[in-house]
Length: 112
Image (cartoon, rainbow, N blue to C red):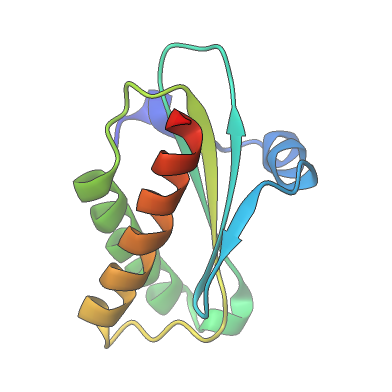
């Protein structure tokens, strides 16, 4: 994920989450917004309930890897992935399947 594809500002996270376009599962909530810019931007939210900083950073690395394998960055959307406290970083394959399913549903909704 390149720097230009990352959402960092709190205001932008709030704008995307206010629209209430979302998909939800046990471990994730994926918010999205269609836009007119050239490329996709992604933000990842991991709360303190997920553990200490080392654990939260591990979760973010895992989620970035999953997103890079599913998303092509030439689509015109902003995505915020909020990870719930139910996320278990030791069950990577289950988490990958769950997030992949949500992102594929989102891609289908965007393309319609």
